[in-house]
Length: 449
Ligand SMILES: [Zn+2]
Ligand SMILES: [Zn+2]
Image 1 (cartoon, helix red, strand yellow):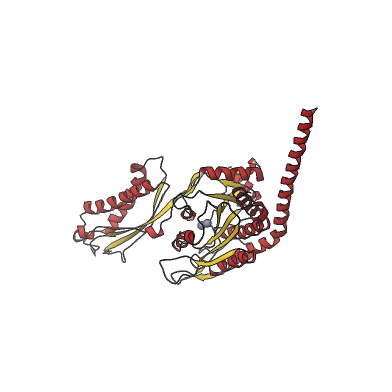
Image 2: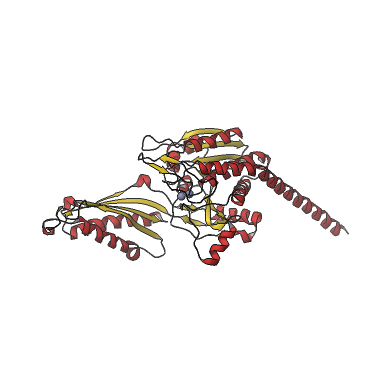
């Protein structure tokens, strides 16, 4: 009897807990439902008014105003750049809610010089001057407008659910992600001295290769480091009809492009992913003139820092060695310039933190809607916020494609437009709803009372 009684008691306690959990979840859904029309409107407005990297002035002001209205302590104009004349700066909204972990939630703000071709009614027609003063069409082709919308939605929800978490919430909106400059600029402006250093840093990115309503994760290395490298191949110019009295940098540059392909295939372990791409080659003015120089622009992608360093040494060695082999005088050796200020770190998703996120996602959406996603060699600057993996950080993938189009693409084999495509059109509902739900649930889990 007693045993049976105890069991009954436990059962009813468990039932009450279950009811309470459901009630919280229902509250949540109700709050998101209430806010969704406004968020969808916000998304469309942001989408129609994108701003280029370094110039996200209005977007940053909008985020600051939203956070201020919600009662966050807001600091604007955070960021130190090397170049003058830039107007896009970071925003931090801080909300202290007792003792507990410091959780950084990051959104990016910038759009791209892309002429939109989605045909959606809120498509961008915006034009802007880029940092070189050229006017270009601008589009949120990477979906950072989705991130901003979910960011302000999450901030609002976390304020409403303040009695369910403790600690310090840092909502960080960074400019210039697409040029791998904004996160670095904010840290250079003493982000972690002016605000508490985070216990965890979290971000999300929309993903066209996942249907809306689902989420993806990648433990460990998820995105690669990116390093710009310029090679100035110098020769000795002359008349096109008299090659014997010149040292032709066009031929040398052509050979160099081919030999650089062997760095990855012959000098690197196949277990360490590397991409080395020569993206531009420029030289010469006229068909019958051997020019003095040819310029190459490369991008190097790696996960590991020691691999990155080794390949940079290889590039330098090969460029200089090949010039010597071609008989270019030593004083005309190629100039290899590694643009470290514009380099970005890999995105390393802390495995333990990512596992915790996966647990949250699974309990929220069910295992069928949570996907492990392969790492990519694309780049991001979110990794900067982890201070070289000292702070556990994780970025998850938010499904953004219309499930009907997703199924169609699977059936027909027609690829979906990827990020940066003029055709990339995230499906606002349920992408935004899911973004707010997932990010809020993650923060509540990390800051639980
Ligand atoms: Zn992008
Ligand atoms: Zn992006």
